[in-house]
Length: 175
Image (cartoon, rainbow, N blue to C red; front, side):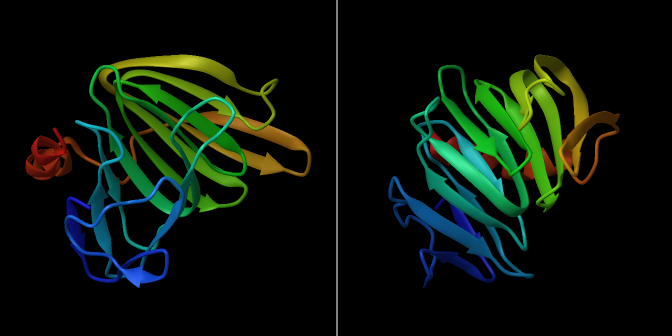
């Protein structure tokens, strides 16, 4: 943990700065919780309030995060790679920055903030492509209605470049 404030738990125990995160873990933040973690050298992930995320592996990536509720903002240096998935979408990233929210199991928001983000809906036929951004914040909302999935372009929501600047000290520590 690079930062931890308010209610933040790692596997049911209070999380503190410099606490190591095992390869398989669960992080939960409360209404006043906030954390910044690192999973690879140089990579920083902001875990926002009211967030539940499982950390593990997937078929595609050595490091995989399952965002069950809440929001994550990831910053990866060149060469770092992992994925974040919800029940209805996945963002595979490599040396880039992206923001992701799971509003509920059928509603996911993904913003490609900078770099190339491989974004897929759970039903790959409805949306599967690499989204490239050079700080343009290209965002999409994934909605599941019955068996149908819809992907819609969205404006940037709930994250700003000024907030990113506040995370810079933690990102430097991650190196």
